[in-house]
Image 1 (tube, one colour):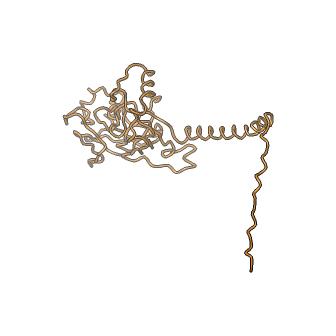
Image 2 (tube, one colour; image 1 turned 30 degrees about the vertical axis):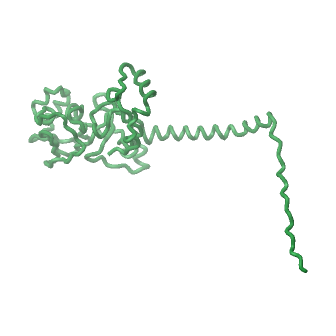
Image 3 (cartoon, rainbow, N blue to C red; image 1 turned 180 degrees about the vertical axis):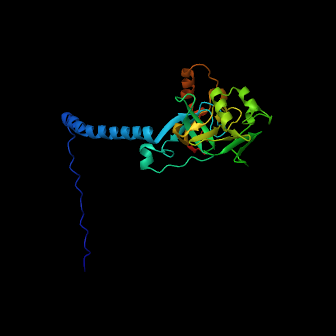
Length: 269
């Protein structure tokens, strides 16, 4: 009778347990890894500073002049490279030409330490005219699905530009004098290297109608992304008034309720 082979039982020996490093050895190991950690941190900081300094910049929307495209409490990342005409970036990366309809962030010509955000309506050589609630460029009416007019009247002074009565609106004297030299047949001609900008909220925007053109050199970049949006205290059921500290306290204590989640990480166009 043939016997069936019996499988040999294999026993697995437990792995040899290494003793835990002593206190001094552990400290030496930590010190050995410290330079690498510091180096990684420094690289991260350098990259962040590079991005913030040269590629993008963060801004907050403080006014209603660009509603409903941009709202008070929107926090933007502004692309500083796309319009980098000239300078270092102009030689390294291709830049985009500024066109009608583009939203731009720029140094306010009257007070260059301030930043404004508006929409480009006229580029160099364009002829601009506003009649009622219609903007005309080079004799053609613009289709502006982004613009809002909250005044019921079509004959509001800021809906007719340029005209002799516009000086009564508090237009800057320098701009009023310059404007008169650039108006022909009821149309304003945009000079070379200048841009005519308007806010999307035409009733509540301090724009080129009131202070003039934006020089090309003043343009910082274009809004790229709304990375966060929080409703203003006066738009929120929880009212907080007073100092900047009270506003900060409001933000910290109501961040979840007040955040406009539907606007967060929205592209700007």
